[in-house]
Image (cartoon, rainbow, N blue to C red; front, side, top):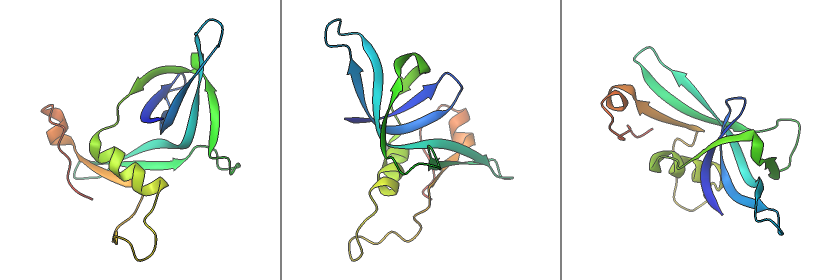
Length: 125
């Protein structure tokens, strides 16, 4: 599996470990199997810092794996390295006594000025 960002037909952005589901006879992609999905949200602060948030996909279920029909997905993208790193920390937090993470929130800040100049840099959060 590979971690990807899926953009759905209703505009949701979902980051998850993704595997294609194919029809065995026709090899047509019929869906995607998602593991540890998180809905991506954004918050813009007064200083124009953009923070990326990860929320549960379905709050009324404890399922961590499920399928999404292929016709519901309009785009599949590679996450930025800093987003991928934060996602990994969210879904696989360090065990007590391992490397200490002092500010483990489901957020990653982005510098919009840098984004406007087509740079992929972010500030550490």
